[in-house]
Each structure stands twice: as C-alpha cells, then as structure tokens.
Image (tube, rainbow, N blue to C red; front, top):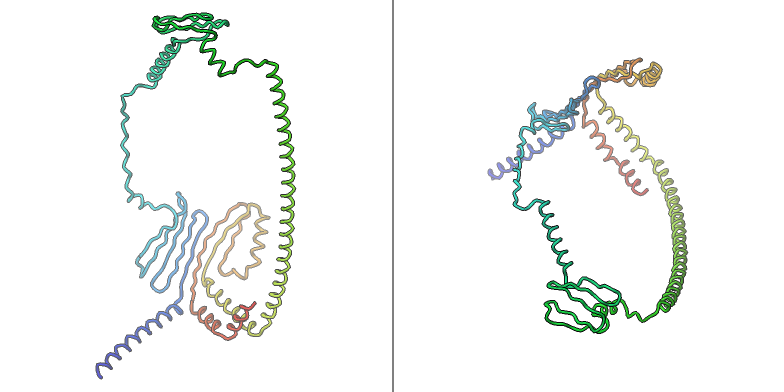
Length: 382
C-alpha cells in the first residue's frame, strides 16, 4: 500500500509540474510583450534596421546601400549569442573564398595526315576530266547526215555505216554485219518518240478537241465548287447567328437570376443587421479593433523630414496639406521645408510593445459569447 501511494505521489508531482510549466508558458506568451524598434535614414546614407525581441531571443535585420547595390543581413540571437545568419540581399564575399576554381580543360591537339582541301579538289577535277575523255572516245559518237548514214568511232578503229545494205567492220576489224533500212538507233528513236505516221493536221485537230473538252470540264467543276462554297458559307453564317442568339438569351436569363438572388440577399442582410445580438457583436468587435490598433502603434519615436519641391509655391502647398493632420503627429514628426531645392531627406526611429494578452483575452471572450454564436449561425444562412 505504501509503494502504491508513493507511485501516485510521484505521478501527481510530474503532472503538476507539467501543468505548471504549461501555465507558465501561456502566461509568458500572454503578458510578456513583444518589443520592436525600427530606425532608418534616407539622404547621403540609405539604410534601415529592424529589431524584434521576446524574452531572451531577438531577431535583427540590417539593410543598407553600398557601391555594389543593396546589402541585407538578418541575425537570430538567443541570450545575446548569434545562432543563425541569413543573407537577405546582396553578395556574400565569404562564398567566393570557398569556391574552388574549375580546372582548365586541356586543348585537344589536332592531328591528321590527309590532304589539304585544295589538293583534294585538284585530284577530284583530274579524275572527272579522265571520265569525260573516256566518254568522248566511246564506241558511238552520234549520228551524221540526214540520209541515215552514221559515223562511229571505236576504240581500236573507225566504223562507217552506209546507206542501205552496207557493211561495217566490227571493233576488232574481223567481223562485219549488214544494215537494211533504218539503223537500230533510228528504230529505237522511233519506238520511243512515236512512229511518225500521223500527219501534223490530225495532231492539231486532236489537240484542239482535247483542249476544248478539258476547258469545258474545268469550267463545270469550277462552277460546281463555287456553288458549294456559297452554300457552305451561308450555312456557317446561319449556325453562328443561332449560337449568338442562344448565348444572348442565356446571358439574359443569368442576369435576371442574379438580380433576384441579389435582392434576396439584400433583404436577408438588412434583417441580419437589425437583430439585437448582431448589434451587440458588432459593438464588441469595434472595441476589440480599437485595442488592437492602440496596441500596435509605437509608444515612442522621432522623425525628422526635410523636403523641397524646387519652387516655393509647390512646397508651401504641400506643407499646408500636411499641416492639416498636425494634431496626430506633432509629438514625433518634425518637418523642415526647403523652398529653393528639390530634395528629400529623412531620419527616423520608433519603438513599441505588443501585448498579446490584451488582444487575445477580449477576442476569446467575444468568440465564446452567445451573441457571437447566434450571429455566426445566422450569417451562414445568408
């Protein structure tokens, strides 16, 4: 029994310490303020600094203009010890030191035993000339005379063919052959290009008849195609007109439906605002917003501004507009006009404290209230 009680005692102590630690954390979050401080300058030097702290931790950010451009660094500290450093903008010089220089690629030595381009072209031309000479000295050169006689030059000698019934020596000069009528070459030409029996008049009449029938066929097909195109265009235009009319009627119906829904929502919204619990919720929400705004505003600060618009008229007009709000900024803003130069310079700093509890506790009571629940349920029905 005693052991059981000691175990329960230890468990109770552990649970109590955990609950106490959670309560301590909640109280710290609610009642320990978050501090912030902002400072900056614009003129000969351009830069800014922001510092946010809570308990023993803080985060700072510095931005300034250098010759290379804008440079920004953020630091995180705990108990004044730097934990992490972040480069926001600009170039980090330390990174260049750690970079390893890339190895230079070795140049590939070009080696080759081939001929130069000029030499290759010369050899190619010489080979082509040899081929041409061989073709010129081929066994048959062409046809001569209109009577059908042909002169052919062979490799070892010349062969002449007479008119009809003549004999010709072979290439070696030992054998001969007779040629009756047209030579084989003329027969081949007649076979390829025609027999030559048709007269020129018949050719002309045939060509004219074929040309006329072809023109008539082309005209008929062109007329048919044009009619089909006209019918197709008219059909497309009709379909497009029908689609446009359908869209117009559909949009008209949609507009009318939206109009009816907007009228209904307007009536429901007016009824929603007239409810007493809705009015109570809105009043409490306004008070909460005022507390939040007051809590976020800086408590201390100072700003010095020097501005000029080059002419006294423009500068005076701008100064008059700014002075209309003098009661709101007279404690922390000091304005100095410059009437004969166009310039602007500023130097400012401000700091404040944000209490999360002063915003969280009223917000929690507002959310848990009955009026807020009824208002939320009614708003969902709108």
